[in-house]
Length: 492
Image 1 (cartoon, rainbow, N blue to C red):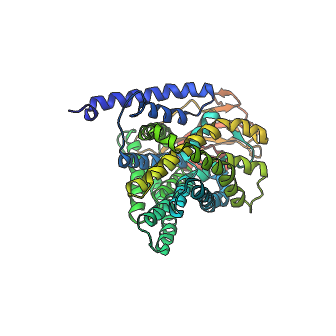
Image 2: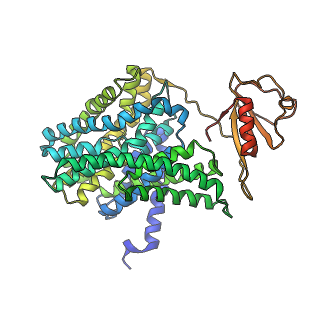
Image 3: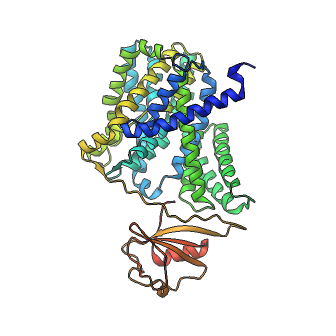
């Protein structure tokens, strides 16, 4: 058997690259370099023109793995989206995900036409490919840097990066068809664009509701099977939406937002599972993309690609943000920060494989320029985020909530659950003892966190504003406690 098809060799190389990437990410954190950049570099070093000498030119496989990876990354991002903080930026995010993508594609396409000498259709195709911000890049870099922003910057960034991919995918597919078949009428392309977004959004909301009901009603014999179930749901939601000409990516993200803001069994552990799975896909995706590129080809387009990168960072993204948010009252400094965090990552590189696989003329040039733009974005924008945030005066300490030490896995019919409630200052139970609350005996307060201290609650324990209560009980009784204390559910 040839070495490159021997399963043992494939597993050895894959495990080695993953291990090196994880160790490198810790080193990157100390050096102030984003882990995604290191993953790309490791992939390039392992490739055919690097020290590893691994020959890899399978664009179809890369696109397949990239599509699956992006679906699960978006699902994890949706699960972590807190609707209370996202709702105020809903229309701003939608504006950036639609109008912002179109404006960015137009500005970058114009620059590519004059700087690279590409025909208008190909130039606009390149603009569409690099137009979306990347969910994996935004989520990963913000977590790595533990960056906290003032106002609504962070929820807007996370929401925009989660929903702008469908717009870009539909735009890239339409322009790819136009490039491969010149003279094709524009009306069907425009209709497909609108249909993908509408169908994907509606199906995602409906399937998210059905998924919550299924998770709460199905009784699986093993806890680990719930992870298999949610994995299957991601595949089903994406596949069904794509089959009926909707955006699978949008459907997966919307469904995950619905699920993440609803109560279902094993929610905490399911989220932990998908967080780890998302990170695994992130590493694999960037390693593959690094393997796929040829550094010598990047050098050929380096200068014009650098100029296009400057247009994207300095003109395209800021124009899209300031025009897309013109109707909002967001301060100019906050808009500038949103513009600077417009990170490009794996999504543009995956989108660049569509023209290659469709046989579009000069598609390889588009791919190489796209890869260069991503490198510049992660290297320049990704490494400078803390500095720019301080310079704009929008940085503030990240309000991270310590994880409660108790975990609970429902058994039997799964009627009970473990939830966290935060007591706000206006709660009617502030200053009262637990014994005086006369809570239903079916809802038990098992742990209390006050600041950085964990307390074992007793009957004479007096509740204070900001206390985090961990309660065990059946959903109806937990809901009763929530109503009587006017508490807020902590985001799991």
